[in-house]
Length: 558
Image 1: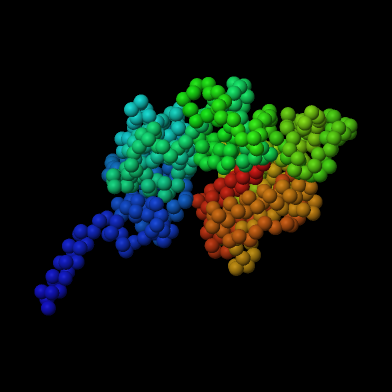
Image 2: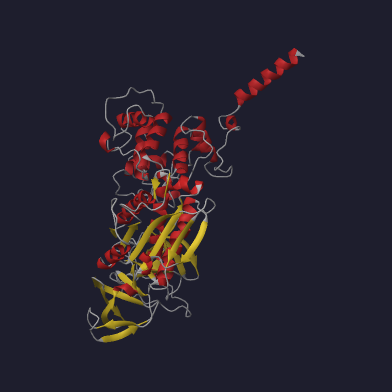
């Protein structure tokens, strides 16, 4: 009996020793990493290596901070026993774990800015910074040459092009449709994939030189006139909105087609061009119009001049005047949904052109739409952090609504400014302003959109996000509802909040506004699940990103 028992134990030990690292993790699995996900093996591989902690959840969609990258790369490269140097690291306590890994990462040169005072451990890292860090950590820089051309075409002039190229030829990343997206934030699942691929070749991608990627198709714009641009439309129809223009000779990536229209990708934005004005001979320096004639049933689209900014009329019977004041003679009337060319703006007046008529309309009744570049660029957006000063709003365990809303508002402000928007904060510190002062502030500064940010409270059972608009007084109720819907959907999806819907209610700051105005209730501080998110810096970033994305989508809608 004893012989059998020890033989069994010996067999079990041999079996355990024979297990691969992934098999040894059979008893551990992140609850939020499905077994069929593309990153399942890699995430659990780096967990087994101690590069990330074996916690109940991995949170794959969360953005990584610089301190996280420092720790993971130090452990992945086996340099955690490096003797620490005497340095101050951006206010980190020398006794903390964050300080240790930041100290070593800075010594090793993982970050391009080696000034410890500017390390910013809690700042979310971008993909280009990640490329630099991984290139240094794993010695992966690859000079761009004719033998090893750049694998991703959106970093041709980037200062880290050689380092990004090194990641490409090491099989660590091939980007998204040949785009590296250097300014995008880095998620936990992405970095897990990259680190695992750098550490173990079993996870590395099969490397193809760019000219072997036959699945990517290109055409060149060929309008037949060097000065004649090609319109890119939002749908495969001549009557659809123009979202971009392409100069003659532009090389453009094709991602699909429908009848005689090509679906194209332009810097991450999808649109449609008519195939008649393209050539598949992409080597032509100055391509000519293709020789095949279009079918009789497909009339030749006529390119039309495109304004930098278009305006969508938001009300019926809008007066178009001969000058920028309310007493000037009327030269025409516009209807809701009508598009006009915006020539200039001054205060609340926009100089416009429709057909052969030029005139002025009050900007309040136009949704201004950029036809090129970021849809948020130059838009005047007021961000209103609720409460402040002697008015803390709702609170729990010392956490106040006024502090939470100001934190989120500042994050939204930063994201909008980065997109080129003109952002105005009703308050940037712990100061009290009346509700009327907030709406007056928006009107005085010719606001085009208004977003108030608040926190809810009620019984313990109430939870979730809701966004309000007003139709009782605000003339732009339809636009407000549209904006509210975009923001609500993004918060619910990104922060995994209960969906309480978009609601019509006359809160003062949205009722007494005359532009697209919404009031966002992030969640209920009285609910334990919502409270955990409302007091988490990670989720406050998610809330801010969701609000920003909602505004981006609202202004992208033509």
